Image 1 (spheres, helix red, strand yellow):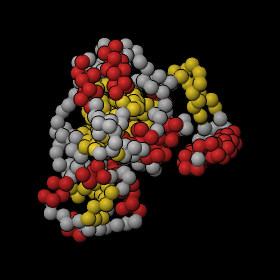
Image 2 (cartoon, rainbow, N blue to C red):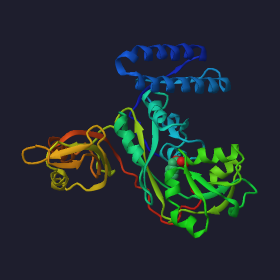
Image 3 (cartoon, rainbow, N blue to C red):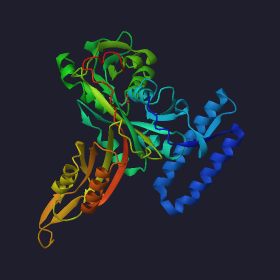
Length: 382
Ligand SMILES: O=C(O)C(=O)Cc1ccccc1
């Protein structure tokens, strides 16, 4: 079990009648902020508040006298009370990741990625669990972009073995399928297998495997199959047409856990740590070789690098006089390295990188997932 219990909490009992004015008050606050922050961000916040008021109302009908968790005092948050946000419905791989990271947590289901981030930012959840890369399909670029757009910290990682099945309504036959729908990662992880099965179908991406399952079940679509887990089949009344359709049994997805506060920087020697950063270069010549030397100098292993377009500054213009004759695309670089910010060598490397870059953000230092790697045993785990 992960224990990143760096939060201090007081548990307050709120009657629902008290919660609604609170949400209303917050709504008014949003309007006040409208003028200062701009329409888009305030509308996003207000939307999230409205959704969560409904969530509280629904939960309140079930359990009058709902509890609300406030973050301001000295009682340690018990890991089992953590509210963990993820995208999708019960049965999503992200739900498995949330349970692996925080056993007995309270799931907070989100229907959009932006909402998943806001749910933590607005304190409706304590953590969010976000898939960032897969061993077959690679990085989930959108989620990297969101990490930068929001101010949450990475406080942990989990590696989840992924076992995909082809699911359809009872009675649906493989030869009558015209379409397969799922999360883009699931669609990418089965490329070879579906070709082998000889299916001539179109593919459609949805935001999660479980949203795809719900879509097929609620619209009674006999010509559409879903790529999702065995648990999703049970939950949505679907049948397994084909079991284990990922292209390789060693299919693993890495999820990161996000929180409002960083993982506490405590010097430790027993657990291997990882640090994730993002940065962009200054205008002018490339300095990437120097950035890597900073890590090499500290004998720090770089385990991952992701490169994304620098949307705010798409083109870098370079020549000796900076007259604009050579043009490169400009990027944001995401790097994971094997050290904690508690270590002097990491601090020195980061100080060096800071000198070389126009912006630098440390997303977090956190314990590495050291789960033993057992290729081929992914069957029916997820
Ligand atoms: O859609 C889901 O169930 C997710 O949790 C995202 C996902 C999809 C495929 C592999 C890993 C995570």
